[in-house]
Image 1 (spheres, rainbow, N blue to C red):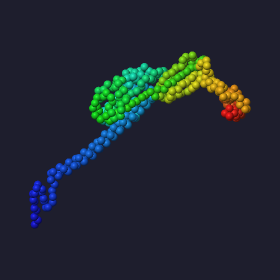
Image 2: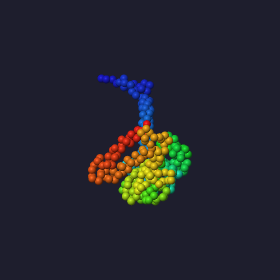
Image 3: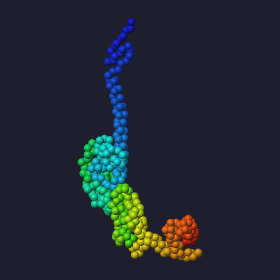
Image 4: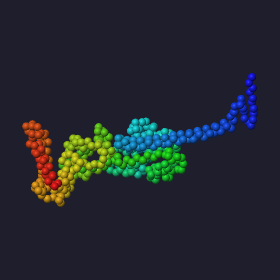
Length: 373
């Protein structure tokens, strides 16, 4: 027979000689576990918040880049209507428009333009802007910001005033913009402002007609080679046309008879000159002023009138060098006009013009070496 002795002493219960656990001890263990859990959970929550902030910052950069691509692709700048601009951005990102309009916290993203925005006479309140055939002559403050917050609510600050926009544009990292209501959002790092400047998407294009006999035809297309063409022409003796076209705009340059000479995609500032029935990047002979005979003529003048010129040891002088080069050019022109063959259909290397070009090259090299020495 086994005797079981149960004794009570100082609030402790002993059964079979084994020590029990008091309520106070249980509470203490729970308190320690709670503190540890809170520390771990707090760190996890903070990491989750930081990850959400990092993801939103990256997403806002993607949206800003997609907005620029949408403007260049569509040749238009949307207004602040959320459905319009989010749809254009969504196409560039390959996602749904509602994922552009709202962030992961359920807050809406809003678009704010610089009140000084003016492109071709279209101000911020008159958007959308759509590029037409004449392009735009003025591009003023084409800036905007996209605002997103990972906390509910919207600011009461006047965002559409010049001061309000400037405060947004100049907002310091991890701080609320100047003039904003204190406490929204509670954590400034939950506010994201993506700046977008469209200035570099507008390229200045200058078209000049120095032909003197024919108008200079050209056409600005919408956004693709098969798009609608805004045909135009610069009359003789008319002043140059200077305009701004959005990046990637197809510009068609035509010969004097109206047939297509070339298609240029506008990717930088450039000028084109119409002369002798065709377009060039520079005037060649030209009638563009009483003191100028075009770029080639200017180079010839500089070459002949160089102050260090003198007759060399083998008798080379500026005039003879220029004549030799022009003879080469004329020979090449005759050869091309003959289809690079002679009248008997011989191969190009048997034609007199080709042989002239082949023979004159060493002489031009010797002349060049003589001038250098």
